[in-house]
Image 1 (cartoon, helix red, strand yellow):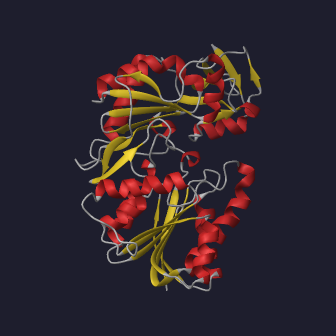
Image 2: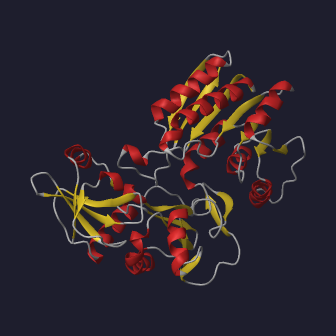
Image 3: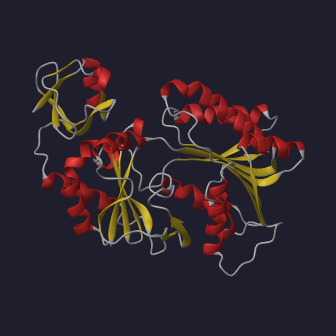
Amino acid sequence: MIRIKISKTLEQKIRRGYPWVFHYQVQNVNIKGKAGDLAVVYDSKNEFLAIGLYDPESEIRLRILKTSNPVDIDNAFFEERFNKALVLRDNLFSEGTTGYRVINGEGDGFPGLVLDRYENTAVVKLYTSAWLPYLNILIELIKKKIAVKRCVLRRSRKVAAILETSKIYSEGHLLFGNNVDRPIRFKENGIDFEADVIFGQKTGFYLDQRDNRQAVRLLSKRKSVLNVFSYTGAFSVYAFAGGASSVLEVDSNSIALESSKKNLRLHFASRDFSGAEFSQMKADGFDALSALESDNQKYDMVILDPPAFAKRKKQKNTALNAYMKLAKAGAKVTKKGGLLFAASCSVHVSPASFFKNVFLGIKSAGHRFEEISRTSHAKDHPFMSREGQYLKGVFCRII
């Protein structure tokens, strides 16, 4: 068994729920070990503190499975965790939702692993190769616990780089079931979507924004909507489902814009949208907002859902400035009395810092505002520590 020594400061953080030990936090390790080995952390009194999955190839050297008292990490351990995850989601979904997260990494006690379901297809995504020795256990649990016909494997970039050398588990590898030869159709709050579970972002769809999309749906009746960084248009479809009068999408990715059109046709198969009702602009979000302001265009609702501006901790300040600049530009094209929704998926940006900079951006545009609500992940994305709270959003009324 691998034994890891850490500092007293980190000991206290782990006792409070911190889920990781980074490579630079390891003061001593008794043996080299390989990915997937179990490693135990002992405290300064040489007493058990935590046990977790070891990965010598990852910056996160240890992902903690259990603290306080030692337990056997076996099939029964993982089945109990799986059952708890299912119970948490028992009452979350009506018959109108068939796409959702089953396991959310650290939040469900499976650090570095997510499991999503799209109708009859399950998608496992690994953020550490430490889970590879346990894949067979997970596959059997999926077969036993959820009624799906197939299961696909996705990999983070770092895991993919490690696996490429061994030529096993390619991207989209079929863990069981029949092959995926087309996007998977599913429902979310009664709305039809498709997920590219092989090559799409994350596992094929941004499931974490479901509650925010539903909020947009409830607020969009008879409103003109500007959807910036629209990607595949999920917010746009929700807006029309809520009765929006028009939607303009902005994205720099032409493939994403085409996918958005497809999603719109998927749910509104019998509706023919006019150019005045639905239009798209292929452009950078900041450039588009500047051009729309210059053209004196204003909207009843503006949605700002950019990709992560801070993928590393050192990019935090740059990201905060970008969020402030974006909120300022968004506020300038929001009608008086209109709604502005701003979101961030940057884990290195705290909710408090994000909200502060959004509000500063609106004020610097010369507007006052009323804060309507602050939002986070959908309920099937639980988090157990601050490090897991990456998604935050805020709805504001411009006054």
